[in-house]
Length: 165
Image (cartoon, rainbow, N blue to C red; front, side):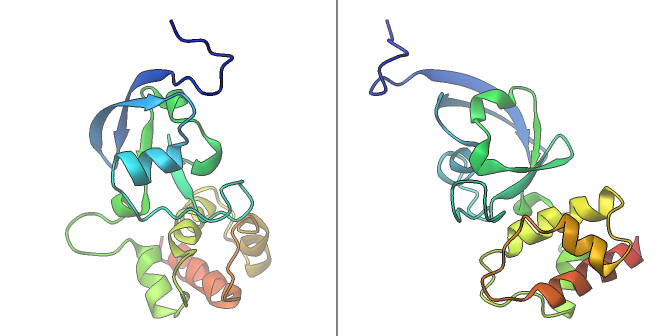
């Protein structure tokens, strides 16, 4: 029997979900975050681990169509969920997602570390109808930090992709 009050004991739980359109069934420790499930269990390294505390946005993914900080979500809560990561964003025919293409065209990535989270958040920003102006984009993207200070180009990329939809 597992003593749930003992932090040294693991509680393993099975979870069935869809990741980037593929059904996945995994057993995870009840303390595993979605971020760690993606990177360590499913070997999807595109989602970045930044602060691991929900402050930087580098780990942003989509769960059931909404952007979430994967470092703050427990994997055991995802039974039946649909998860999309940066690896699953493009249509799969060799083309980039329009926002990925806009990031390249606008030179909106420097070191590239925050780029997956920025793009996932930007896609949601557009989808949610919050890309009407540069100011609105800045406000709705404010949870995503870029250490290189590439914000102007990131905003331009979101504006470009929003204009194409």
